[in-house]
Image 1 (tube, one colour):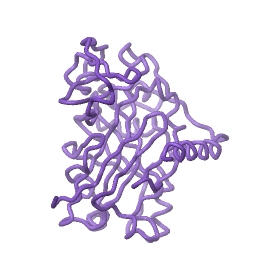
Image 2 (image 1 turned 90 degrees about the horizontal axis):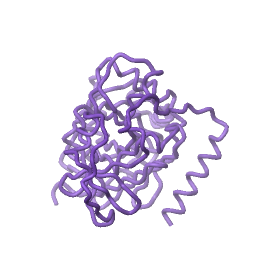
Image 3 (image 1 turned 45 degrees about the horizontal axis):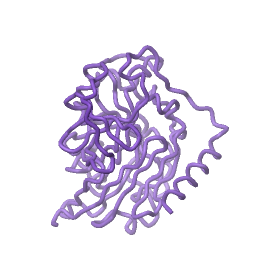
Image 4 (image 1 turned 30 degrees about the vertical axis):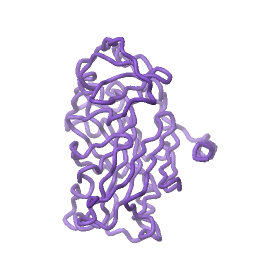
Length: 314
């Protein structure tokens, strides 16, 4: 039933946006390591592999950050594992996680309808706590002593392929190493208090508030990242439905805009959430997450990132 619903939402948004002009982001001048379309995973005790059908072929590299830092094709170890038998981990723990926001103006528009306390301006950026990263099926811990308004935010994130700084949108494609799903879990009540001083970070950086996965998909498998259906479900109920083509800016523009901060190979950059978050809904109280809920963040051509919510006091 959920698969059918996902196909329906993909078709509906594709029809809605089929006349829209999109910007293609393709690879130019990259070395062989990023010329082959594939999905990269981290699994079990930290092994790295690529998905080949229903199997995972292990690669001789300590982690996926090292893979991007080396910029070369890693040797296969010869070991293969059934995908169904491995435990997927967060695919990468970056040196820096650039958390950007305000790129989907529909998110700001929905905030206005409920009188959100602050404007969601374009070009928001701050750094995410990389220690808060969790992988597929790992629990998001609800700290009831800190918040009563736990929210979700579906985002497409970009993995940076190589180090660089101060470059323009026309060069940005060469810095894209892959794409991954990010669920920007947020404590809304804490966020409102933080924003009184004009900044916020704590509300999104609490332990386990950074689900990332289920794998890194190379750009060769996603020829146009502005043509992806996006949906987030809680307990099977659709909460967020949108399309990456609704960004008010392009991914190359986002990457280039923040390049003065300096990128390292394997860094992750988020691209902002879409409409449908609980906190900006008319009946927010009934939609906030609670222990026992299961979130499913899905982006076309990437997959589904699933995470349960558990109580801090468990």
